Amino acid sequence: FRDRKLIAHIIPFENRRQILVTHDITESERIDMMRRDFIANASHELRTPLTVINGFLEIASLQPDLDITIRHSHLKLMTEQGERMQRLVEDMLTLTRLESMDHLLRVETVDMRGLLEQIFQEAEALSAGRHQITLEIDGPDIRGSKDEIRSALTNLVTNAIRYTPEEGKIHISWINTPQGAKFSVTDNGIGISPEHISRLTERFYRVDKSRSRETQGTGLGLAIVKHVLLRHKAQLLIDSTPGVGSKFTVQFPANIAIEE
Ligand code: ADP
View (cartoon, rainbow, N blue to C red):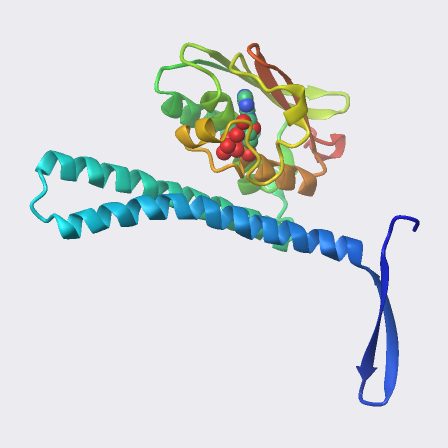
């Protein structure tokens, strides 16, 4: 209790009695601060694309006879910013949903081969031939929420593509170990310095903000991964060296696998 602040509230009860409530305000203060930070960050992230869109709309209304090629390039930029806002809002909704359903997990059988083959195809489409992507599947099916697991693993694979330059290699694997089934994605991309690693799952935390924006990141991907893994009692391990590459591993608990 030494470094905790305790506060006592006197609350009237049915106008007769009074109840003394004590609670730890450091915890509620922390949650409050996180909420304020989230709102501030989210507003900031949404303001940039909105400013761009509003600016071009103003130009369009002030200069209705603008050259058609310029007009097209403005429309393209507005579309990109609109898509960026959509990704942000979708990620924010996913995070909020995950948090508000804290105790509810819709458990079903997850066909991991089917899911990983789908993720692999989507990765190939996103990379558009710029990377060499390989897939190894040797692990079991598991019990969990298919949508949530898809979202977490897709985020990790998408990051590997985003932060690996052209012609880089990305290896996705799903194997069984005595500790439980293990998913990993290894890339030989830009890597991450050790001082950033423990903060990567914080909302909106990015090593390089401008690069993350360029690559269409929202800064919420790993926060979503963290929540999904917590709900499945799985662990995230990050092993990375700047300039060499990164390996993101998800260790699922042994009892989540379905015996064949
Ligand atoms: P973002 O949408 O910015 O990618 P994430 O939450 O998914 O947000 O990731 C947070 C940050 O972690 C990224 O901005 C990036 O700096 C770093 N990161 C994530 N994955 C990788 C990776 N495979 N290689 C290098 N850096 C990565």
